Length: 285
Image 1 (tube, helix red, strand yellow):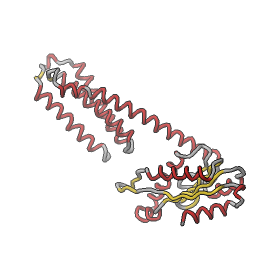
Image 2 (cartoon, one colour):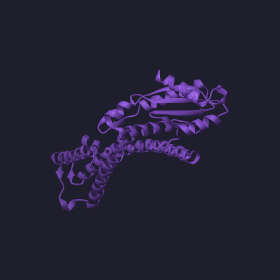
Image 3 (cartoon, helix red, strand yellow):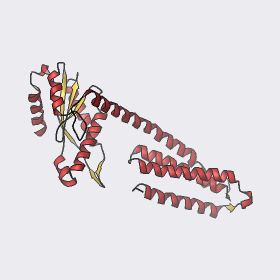
Image 4 (tube, one colour):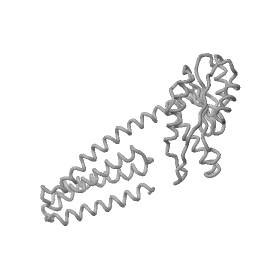
């Protein structure tokens, strides 16, 4: 049971007890002989299944908007169904506002759950696009970096040698990466590299080539983009990485990037090594 499931289970138990006590105190117990067992079983079963799904979502997914919407939807359905179940055991004045409010939790939960499913679909579409990009990378390129599974510096240089059209080359550097390695270990540093590479891939065009250039530096070859457009794209990539919520254990690790940009290809009048050396000087400045 993870850190999200434990408080959720405690809260669900307390909410269920509170609803039962509320019905017992405000209503009149219905004789067991008059109970509608099918309704009790269906409504109580719905409450238990929805509560179980809430715990599954919290345990199986990282925290975020989609997780919270899905969990909140299931929780509202569970609480509303439990209130419907208590309605079969205790007779309550149908004009009671609190009873009506509890019963309204089921449709409200369905609305929240639907919103979560919509955002979840968008999330899955982004992940699918990410996997397609990675599949294209594995299919089209042969030189890989062991940690990030991106093309490496050798492939980048070879690709720049063949670059004949316009385009731009962007170099991205992770701020304070050596501190992350020192404070959290190399394994955590590798996780940071993987997380950053995933975020970059999600925000690049299909034609862009992302490589791990060296250490904590990534290079992006952006065909058919002017230097100004590439700088705008690089700034967007930096913003998206800065929005990430990366944790080393329970400690938040803020991630930011520096970037430099230059024209790429033979039209720039310089060799790939000259372009890359200039970009390194810019990003180190």
